[in-house]
Length: 128
Picture 1 (cartoon, rainbow, N blue to C red):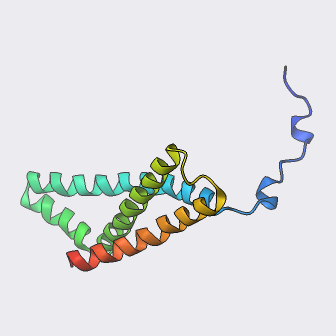
Picture 2 (cartoon, rainbow, N blue to C red; picture 1 turned 180 degrees about the horizontal axis):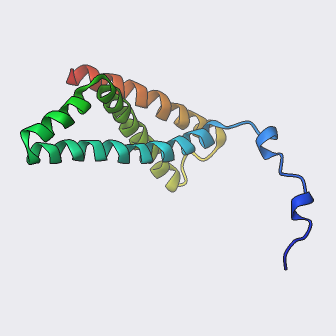
Picture 3 (cartoon, one colour; picture 1 turned 90 degrees about the horizontal axis):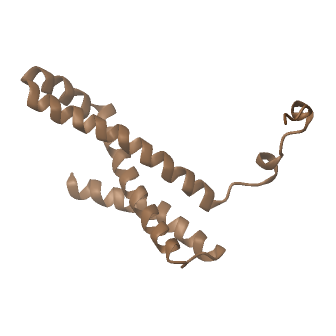
């Protein structure tokens, strides 16, 4: 049966009452980085396909990938890979019913955030 008063009821105030927690923010960011990695993967696939197509196609793709914008996208993709990997490890720990209490969950969240930046910097230094 349809609820005739649906439009007259107040909305839930959850967004104005509850503050975002580290675990919820990192969970949302894990989903965002996973989807962003799809875009980065498509960019790399385009680069490989252009390399196998013709010198002109490769020159065009290579210009985009090696431009300043391409460098920024690749650096952010590198951070997203590390972040997504560390968040996945955190979820594997949680799947084993470990680290579920709030203080440990907070520490694991900070480990994912800080660790992703540190590993990205290390990778950029080693590769460059």
